Length: 270
Image (tube, rainbow, N blue to C red; front, side, top):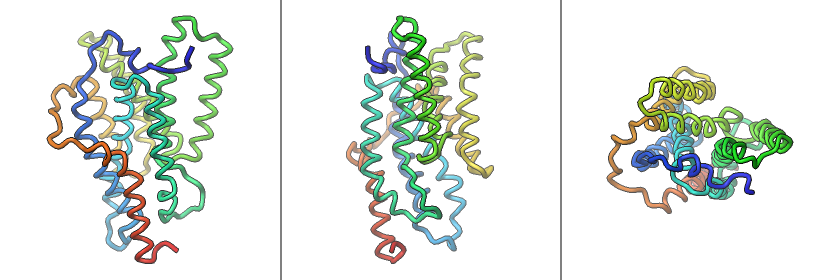
């Protein structure tokens, strides 16, 4: 029996899935805000005084990426683990140019794709647990072993990936909240329960940053994603210009490579 396979689809079996039109807009916004963040952090001279953009516009990118990965993993893909592997491949391609960015520390940090891939893997495992327990496919010893492995991976990987332990929790908590919000319907107790399930991801989003401005943008982005799961996604029209798939896949490693080349040309990189 597979550990996790079609967890996202199984969880939504027999339930009308929400519209994913918003993710078309989300792709453009995520790439724009991520690029602004990285340009302000790595390329633009500090004397230009654009740190405010990194702490505001730049704080939209990660919770938005995490929301889209959680959404697709929960509602759209038949194999979330294969989706996680695709994200990991992008991360592997991007790691070398990512490591060329100027940093204040020599510690190895794995880029955001590792955070997203591991987060989706953990979220898929959590989504599959109720079905596996109900079908008797998970004994107590195996449950303890898997939970220990999941906890150990989170503790260890959180030391190496971008956004750390808090970042790794975003997608699993998003998935739990989005599923409950989508399934809650009009029943008041169910809506209250779903709202309670949304609180942990909002708390974690607030803990990822130190400044009040950064916290407000991160939490605000997370709240919008949860409102979409609660029904607002029905009101979002299709994106006018669909992002080309190749651009979406290549932008993350490509923009790091372009920045590394620019920094080398201007003499910032040794």
